[in-house]
Image 1: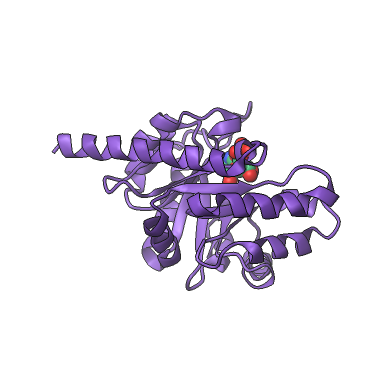
Image 2: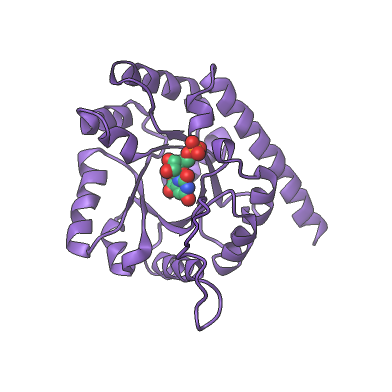
Amino acid sequence: MNKLLSRIQRVDSLLCVGLDPIGEDAQVAGRLAEVIEQTAAYAAAFKPNLAFFLSRENGVALLRDTIQRIPQDIPVILDGKFGDISNTADHYARFAYDVVGADAVTVNPYMGDDAIVPFLREGKMVFVLAKTSNKPTHSLQDMALTSGGVLSDQAARISGKLDEENGGVGLVVGATQSEAMARVRELCPTQWFLVPGVGAQGGDLAATLRAGLRPDGLGVLINSSRAIWQAADAGAAAQELMMQINEHRQVAKIDTVAQG
Ligand SMILES: O=C(O)c1cc(=O)[nH]c(=O)n1[C@@H]1O[C@H](COP(=O)(O)O)[C@@H](O)[C@H]1O
């Protein structure tokens, strides 16, 4: 959390650069190096997605090299959407933190809080999936609870409780879900949200930030993967998105002041 906060302050950015490498194995290492170099100045964090590495020969080595290439002061969120019994989760945590050197992970809360706890470590952060950006035909997250609200609210509450007890726990809320974003922000007023879904998935940046930003203009990390990776100039694409985010942060701050 400290690493994230100092990085955000240093570059005045809430942009998370997603690293979902697509393309031939032979070209991918070079493109990863290029994207990291061109976008680092605008990145509050990087988020490599594990699937895009595991689908290649020597994917774990490529992931480790990629994380090592990222400047030390920029947090790395390994997006593995891990979620298994605690004994197994402990091994995923060792992989993420000790083998490849990530600072944070994404975790699927379907199996409950004991699937999340093994990832809680001093100096590390965990982002728990709450309301994801996809729109499935058959959704679990939208299922009504007998106690009121929907299942994704329960994921938010679990993450809130773990954050209260341990610190370092945030949530994943999709940028395509601005209504849900507002509800999750009510349930979790102080936690950090990792927000994928702008760019290629068409999420509404303005609505997302209006609903998700905390009154201090922080609390949200906006991720973009394909839109940056596929850009002719990845640095320019990252800078442009960072600036758009900052404009909305200004407006949100002005609105907050106006509302008293
Ligand atoms: O946990 C995630 O990062 C995630 C959660 C979610 O709800 N939706 C979502 O798209 N993601 C990830 O965020 C990235 C989005 O990529 P783009 O749509 O290319 O920007 C991918 O790595 C997804 O796996």
